[in-house]
Length: 106
View 1 (cartoon, rainbow, N blue to C red):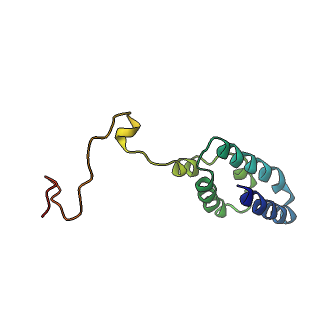
View 2: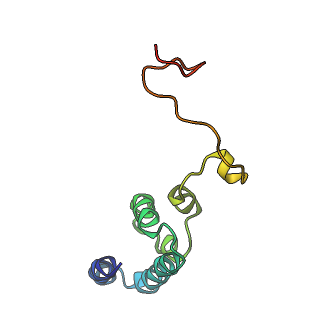
View 3: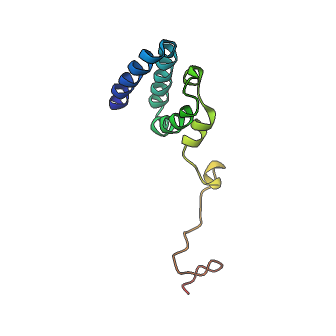
């Protein structure tokens, strides 16, 4: 996290020199990332997803001031349906080279 903050300070300083309106949204974004990290959320994956999105809107400073829902949803780990429903999984993975129907080796 410290490395991200240091790199982001350099990034923000450069962006602010090119576009002074970028300063406040940049601070808002760093606050958002640290809040996600404080909750042990997927802050690094969110940051990567968001930056890919933000490249398409280089002059829109407002995107940095709010959560980009698609980036956040895509950053969350995927759980199997049984885990989402609270049902313990009783199935075993089928080994490679086995029959899909019965799980027996071919």
